[in-house]
Image (cartoon, rainbow, N blue to C red):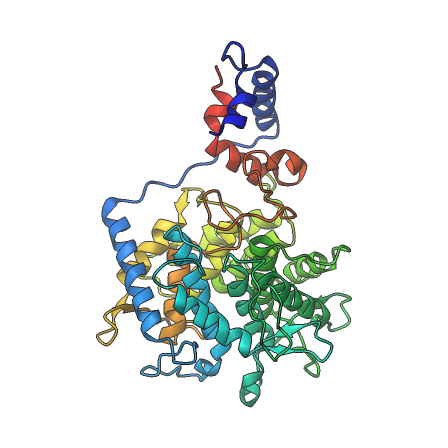
Length: 464
């Protein structure tokens, strides 16, 4: 506790807690009881053995990634080509690798572009991505993914991933290059990220006469239609840009409204709420039951500003968690190998700061980490580990490793207490992690207030 905070909580003359603070604490506690919100369960402590295995898996996965960085700064596992050809998406593959390196640097207490062992590798990946970017003729927008016209292209997907990675490097006001000839000279990383955000805003397309907009595979596709998968990667980029580097959305709330409309269209609210049912889950372009898409849905709801109200069964977040609770018998298995789904769920749980959930308090991180540790493969060439799944996201060893690492690194765009990333002043998390819940009390009490309370229960309820 710093001296300023100490003076606020303690009477400077007697050392006792001020009368007003004590009674405000009691009042806040009573409000929690009135609204029926319980003190959240903390995640069970990870065993020493599992913690060792997690750290070993992270180190081995990073070793594999760095070994597969190419001379131009991109990432590719040329020894194990993607069977579906998605390995031909170097911007997305490099973006996911960079994002994993960003979060790994934070785990080490470092800034990705700061002074530490992998900083040069990080900078090389950043340079590759920014040199490969496409800037519009007016110099207002930037995006990635146009290298893949041969397979239909996926510039919405790829730009979302790259935007997240660039936004998390922890250097918002640093100029990338003074000599670039692609339209990004003298731009800071934050300015470049904002250009990508603006490109997304300009690129959402009204579809099927529903009156709202979304994101499909590519900007400007004829007959383009959004889906939960592409929208999920786009929203991830938007969330990282806002929460990690301080970019802004249009003030009219159109981005959040569009995300919410897509989410409502795809969330199953009619199936019977039973074990193994699709209730609360998400489908591709209609209600369905898909863990990977449902993880995207949970994160999307957070970026759209939906507060979690565990006491309201029809709350969108509550429904999504009910889906995971009903289907955790499969997802929580120690041999589960859908690493793409694990990552999308991780960023959703992380954004809502959920440690345990469900009727039996599933410890999602312990379950996922156990599965990842148990299913790693040793790569004899690099001396590291790789992961290989069965979905189109992770059946390529490079991407499987990237999303597995992002899962055990607990990657999400929220700047949690202790993060190297400082929440920007206009973020909903605020710079003051202890007091920002007061400003957002009515909107985010069930999550933000209880999160702060769990960190500061002594200060709030045990003042003497």
